[in-house]
Image (cartoon, rainbow, N blue to C red):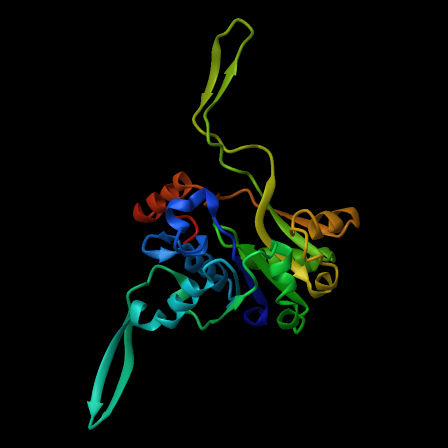
Length: 266
C-alpha cells in the first residue's frame, strides 16, 4: 500500500543562496504562504496517499523538530476543559484547509543525518529504516510541482529499473530574443520555459540501491551516474509546472503564486 512506502525528504543543507532566510533555520523551513515549504512538499505526497515521511535533517535540525513538537497548537483549533486538577484538550478544527497534508493520516520521523553529510550520505544514514519496503521515494526540500506522484511511482514499477528520476523543464530567468542576421528581432519571449530537461529532484528507488550508495559522494555525482552507466535509471518526463527555491527571487515567486491562489502544486 502506498501509505507505507517511505518518503525521504533531504532537509539538511545550508541553503547558502537563501542566507537571508536560512541564517536561523534550514531551507525547508522557509515559509511560503505561512507554512514551511517542507509542508507544501509533504502535501504533494499525501495527495497521492504517500504519508510515511523521513525528514533527513542536518543543519539546524532542531528547528524542524520544534515545529513538529508544536504542530498541534500552531495549526489546530483546540478546546480545553478541566475537571478538578485534570486538564484535557481536543481538536475542534484546523486553520489549514488548503493543503492536503492537514487532511490525511500521516507519520513524520525527523532524523539528524549529519550537518556535513552529502545528499547520498543522508539516504545512507537512513538505510536501516528504508529496507523494510521494496521501494522508497525521495526528494529535495526545496521544490514544488503539480506532478502526480502516484504516476511517477507506477512508471517506476513498470520500468523494471532500479531508479526513476523526474525530468522537468526549468523556467528561464531571462527573456529570449530571436534575431535575424540584419539585427531585426523577429521573436521576443518573456522568460520562456526551457526546452531542455533537468533533474527535477523527485525520485523513486528500489531498496537494492541502498547497497550501492557511496556516502562520501553526492547523490547526483555518485549513485545517479552509476545507475545511468548500468542502464538502470528511468526518466519520468513531466511537462507541467515545476519551480525550485534556490534564491530569494524564487521564494517570492512561490509566495506570490500562493497568495494569488494560483499555486499549481495545491
